Length: 140
Image 1 (spheres, rainbow, N blue to C red):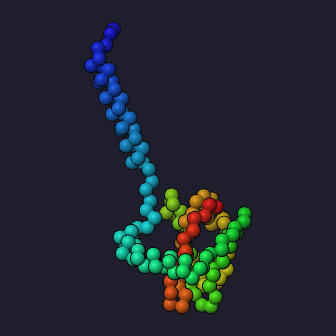
Image 2: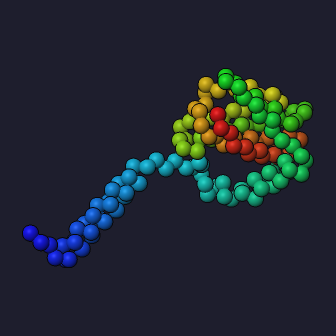
Image 3: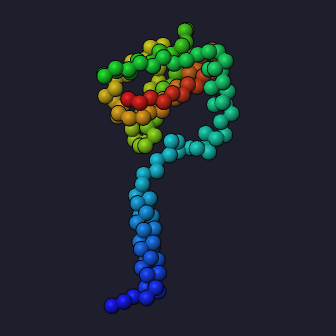
């Protein structure tokens, strides 16, 4: 049986439709966790975040991060009294995110609490009436 060119067009369109539906189905099953649920409120204080990051650069402060097989060591560049909030943000799954409130310059954390992979570390420090924001990317 010989098919004319019209049938080949129909087969191509049906194949293309199946291809599109397959990809739509795959995208619908994709996990899309947001980094923050309150992204609108975060956008309103974005200028403050820029100033906090610039203050870190202006005062030449930097986090010192080391880690071995069992622990993570974070040295904060502050003396005296300060309060810090350290957030480990997992870019793929929000349920793995961890947050720690600290008041010491040396922070020691267990690596067993964090899943291996890429992490975004955000550290917000309140010291002497000023705020500092450190952002680092870690591969554990």
